[in-house]
Length: 120
Image (spheres, rainbow, N blue to C red):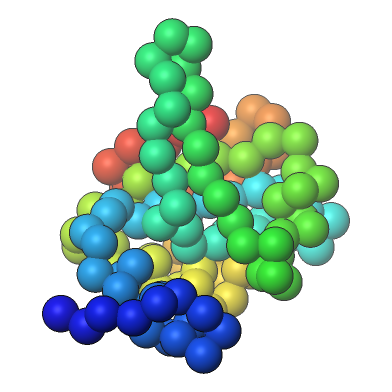
């Protein structure tokens, strides 16, 4: 175990330490004027059962942030352990839907097939 005080100089150590926390991974999708967009996010959690609320937190520094901020609707796809390639795909390129099983939902949101669960 490494001990440090979080600061600008220890940003990498802080990120590595956060990465040691086991968490699920999601892909969040939305429709944009340029086509379907996806982003890999592990900043997802349940907030409330009544009312049913979930939370995901994209980084403001992300190049995709403005698209999600402007989106009226999005879908959160919970990935299984066998979907590592899907996780990596959307961590690199948000518009990489080619060859992927997906369809537009009733509200135009891209819905990826074969995930463990989905929140529309």
